[in-house]
Image 1 (cartoon, rainbow, N blue to C red):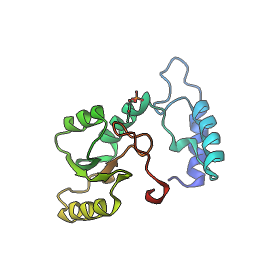
Image 2 (cartoon, protein in one colour; image 1 turned 135 degrees about the vertical axis):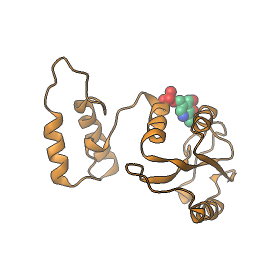
Image 3 (cartoon, rainbow, N blue to C red; image 1 turned 90 degrees about the vertical axis):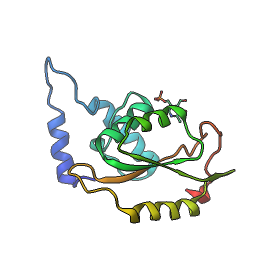
Image 4 (cartoon, rainbow, N blue to C red; image 1 turned 60 degrees about the horizontal axis):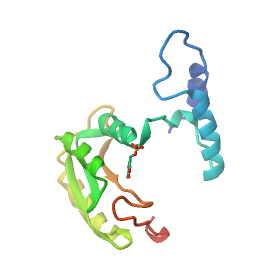
Amino acid sequence: MFKQATVHRMMKEEEHAYLFQYGITSGLWEFREELAKFLSARYGEKVHRQNLILTCGATHGLQMILTTILHPSGIIFIEEATYMIALDMFKQFSGMKIVTVPTDSEGVDVAAMEKIVRKEKSRGSWTMTEGKPFWAMFYTIPIFHNPTGVILPKSKQ
Ligand SMILES: Cc1ncc(COP(=O)(O)O)c(C=O)c1O
């Protein structure tokens, strides 16, 4: 999260027009501004457009996470059954380790997952790298899970 003053400075910089140039990498700011307003109203707390990135679908977003903020030898926790295209993509990042967490009829088994995450973290086989702040991620599909269709109950969220 950015400080308020930083956000204002970034907003001003973004609003410059760049004639004959490609658009802003993170997506058209006018759109992100409207999306930020919509999300702020829905969440009941301020969302800044600087914290939003426009992607070409969920798959693009996932690919961006894998290539930017996750450590190259990081861990990807996944549910026992998961979206096959995401799994194919994870396998392409050969330095990363895929670790399965058990699920039941209500989605991920949170208690079992906690133990698995602790165990993996204690192994500490990664080293901190500039600009790669995360050692692990959890790929989950909490709503209308593909392929099981399960919706994670509120008690597990
Ligand atoms: C869990 C999940 N993620 C991503 C996708 C594909 O999304 P997109 O086309 O936005 O990349 C699908 C499509 O079925 C999906 O089920």
